[in-house]
Length: 396
Image 1 (tube, rainbow, N blue to C red):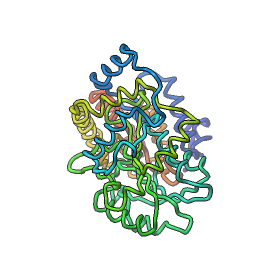
Image 2 (cartoon, one colour; image 1 turned 60 degrees about the vertical axis):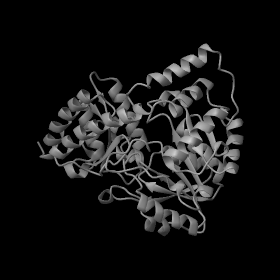
Image 3 (cartoon, rainbow, N blue to C red; image 1 turned 90 degrees about the vertical axis):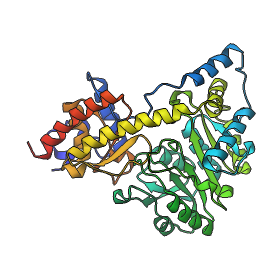
Image 4 (cartoon, rainbow, N blue to C red; image 1 turned 45 degrees about the vertical axis):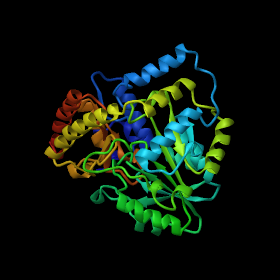
């Protein structure tokens, strides 16, 4: 029986089951009307912004440092970002190669608008976060999906990239670590992909917003650090995930100076410069103590263990989450359709997760589960999820 004919599922949910984004919002709407729901759906960090970053913003406001900045960002922040990316990512850049963006999503939008023309094809890993679709569509580009596999922890293969290239291919999008899969593009794969991109003269847009959240023994690697790649790579990042600064709306992009100029011209006539107080906070994040990043990673590592132990206990298969804040799990391993499982976990377990169709039409048997609740709340969520999965798994 399909979910569209399943009497356990209310008509309001069945009506939007085929549209992953609509289904996601329908579940969120249902959750708002319930008591005691544990939300493991959205991807916003629940940890507080580190005190030294908040203090820097407060100090800037008290001192009247709130005037408008240049569109690409405060010079001292651009310089600090460049220094940070040279040291931690190995990117051969300076301040002229950096601009500050109103969050990571604006960085993506500006990058796509700057380099994609109508009719251009851009290769996109599948599955993917739906914001990429919107940015590419608005530029008149066409997405070509590059498959990834659970058995390979959703690592991107150079052979799959090259097989998708056509005469219309302009660029490749890389997301590492990935939302929703939590896979990473390992260094060996990045080197092989770089060779493909150089050979075919492709631009690379790489989203590294989760780059500081990678679980041992794995390590983050920036493809833009490789020889011949700096001149063709746009690296996107933001303060939101690693520093728990989602609401500050402060991101950044590193790219060749002419691309930064094109992005800045678009930003000038759309959103203008990033809020000055957020830029001072970003400067504190870049130049201040980095203990908070490792402390937050340790918290996420423990949460990851709790969630994976629970899924393992009922034989729930998933791609190994090597980075980021999610588990991308295969509901077919439980015998329950992903959309149905999302509904049942909400109704009977009071746990909100997202069905995989929100991240690509073919991912009807996957769900995305986040780790963004305190450890005891996460343990409670697991304790609620397991009996629901077990009950329907065995057909009771």
